[in-house]
Image (cartoon, rainbow, N blue to C red; front, side, top):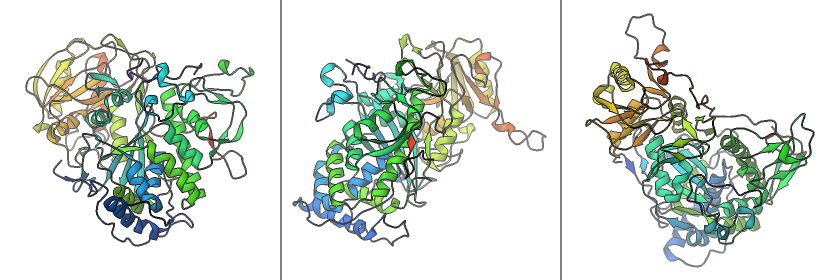
Length: 577
C-alpha cells in the first residue's frame, strides 16, 4: 500500500479585489453576443458558440432531455487540459449530458477572478493528472490494479493554464512533480505531487503558499480521460527518431518512424520517466541494456509538452463539429472529469468564446526551473524521499512573473506592489549549524532595508536543505511580506506558511545554499546597473551563490527535444519540426 510519498511506478512486471466568476452554477448569466473575429478557415463557427450559453442555461434550468439539434463548435487548442475543458463545453448538442455527467467537487482555497491590479481579469486553472487507480470505473491492468496495492493518489501531472482575456493569450506552466516544498501536506514537507493524497484543496494550498500562484479553477483527469480523448480522435501520430523503451510505463517502440498511437500507447509515452533509447553507437538489441536518460521528471515534462502540441494539432486538423466524433469525445471525457464546484458550464463556454483563436504553436509552455539533487536519495528529518528537486528562487520568480504577466515588483497573489523593506520585520534562524550564519544573514538583510527582529538557531533538517521564508498567517499582507524577503535572496529558497519567531512578520530559516542580493548602488557611484541584482555571498561558505554539494545548476524553463524524443510527424510521415 502506498500513501503517495512519490507515486510508485508500475514495475516491469505490471481577496477583496477579486470577484467570483458569475457562473457559480450552471444557471449562470446569459452569454452576451460577441463580434466575430477572423480565424483560420474551418476552425471556428462563432454562431454556434454564442448560442451555446442559451442551451446550457436552458439545460441547467429545466433539466429537460438533451436537445436534438447540433451546432458546430471548432477552435484551436493549446493543451490536453484545454482540449478537455473547452471540448466538452463547446458541444452545444450535449449540454444536458454535460451538466449531468461532469463531477463537481469541493475545492477550498480558490481565489476569485481579480478585478484590479496587474493581473486584472486573468484566470489560472490548475490541471492535474491523478494516479488514482482505485477511482477508475473500470480497472485496467496496464495502469496497475487497485486490488494489487497500486493505490497511491498523487498528481502525476501538475500544469497551470493561465488565461488573459484582454490579450487573448494562453500560457502553460508545468510544475515538476518531484519539487520538494514545505507545505506539500498538512503534516509538512514533501514532494509537491504528494499533496493530492490529502485532496485537491491541499494541492491548491501548496501552490498558493509555496509558489505564490493564485488558482481560480481546478480540473482533474485520470488515465481513462486521457486515453479516451486520444481514442475518440482516432489516435495521434508521433515520429520516433530511434527505438525507445520504458519498463515502468510500458512504452516499447522498437522501430523508428511515424507511428499511430492509441490512447494506451499515448499514455505510455507521456508517463515515461525511466526512458532508455537505442542511440548512435548502441549495438545491442536488448532494451534493458540501452542508455538511460537523466532528469527523468523533467524529461517527461518535455515530452508531454511536445505531445500536447501534437494532440492539439490533431484536434485542429480534424475539427470539432463532427457529430460522431463529438459524441465519442464528450461521452469519453465527461464521466471521468472532475472540476471545482464553481466552474460552471457557462464559464467554460466563456473561455471558448475568448480563446477560440489561440495559436497552439505560439502559446508558451514553460516548466518551473529547479535544482536537481544529484545524489538521487534525499534525506529530510531522517526520512528518505528519493529523487527530489529544489526550487531556485531567482529563476522561479522570473518564470512565474512571465507566466502571470507581471513584473518583479508585483505581489503575484494580489497583483499589487510588494511592500518596501522598511515596512517588513524579519527574524533569522540558523538552520544548518554553520557558525554565525544567522547573524551574517540578518546583517545582509538589514543592509537591504529590512527591520531585524532577532536571530537564533533551529535544528537542521538534513545535510542539504532549502532556505525557507516563513509567514505566520495566510493573509495578503503576510504573504506579500514573505515575497518581498524572498525576492532579496537567491539559490534554493522557498516561501511557506508557518510560525515566525521574535514577533517578526517573516522568519528566514537558512539552508545549505542561498545568497543575499547586494544593496542597490548609491546614486552617482560608478557601479554598473546590474550590480544590484548580482548575488552577494555572506562570509560563510554555505551561503555562496554557486551550486554546492548536491545542488545542480537551475534547469531551463524551456528545453529543446533530445535526439531520442518522439515528436510530430510530417504529412508525408517523416520527422516533424
